[in-house]
Image 1 (cartoon, one colour):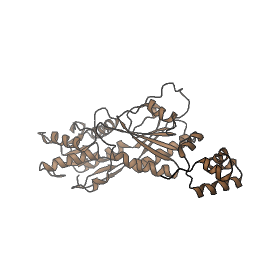
Image 2: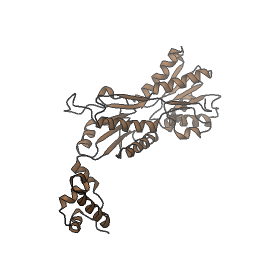
Image 3: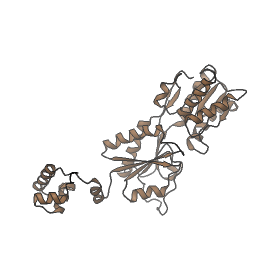
Image 4: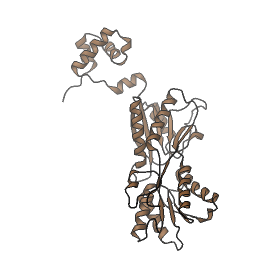
Length: 337
């Protein structure tokens, strides 16, 4: 195994002391040009690699964004979140920042955990992905300034955090209006888990839009689950047992819609002739189902990029109070409706 080249090795080769070597590598503006060039030359010749952790410790920064992604019990991180992570990584790279990911088993991410990561220097800032709750850290003084923490997919501005999400209501209004235009007057909503903010927003968006159109009594709610295919399939079984079936099903996620679609087709019913089905998220696979799925596309890459930009603005003092950035979704009509 090759021995790691150390500052002591560079000092021996250059005749300089270790503290001068360290300054030349980490703070080259504090040494002469001649010294800097000598150290860089010898370091290159010996194959010296900077100890990033030690350098960051001395600088008091890690240049790292920690992404904490919540998940349901027994589930991996949602594919929706991985698309957001791509946007986070692209923007972080452009800003010279690193990204760490940690799956958080649960829907509420603890403020005390977040503060521990920040205070230990593990990361300089944190992105919370779909955390249902946020309580201000114990002992933090109101007006002390913005924490370098941004919420994604959940509006936590009232709890003191800048937030980035999609205009979910607009997406579901577009679905309802499209189905009404296609002649549907009896609807089912395939729900997400009880008590989850997204589920509440999406169901109410459908209910309120139908009520505005005089069809509020023409909506039934089918129990789903944690935004996955099995929960969509379970809702479809309930749907098939109904005596008076709705002609359109609006799902809380694309994964649920796919599970619902598969079960409906397996039963011998036709889509969209017997029941129209719409999803939400805009996952890539929705264009390749048979029939292809009508859905609302969330701008997931852009959400990730914007969240990192908001973090950078907080760190640089350009954002000093909680704000919400809500990005517009895109409604895509396909064969399932």
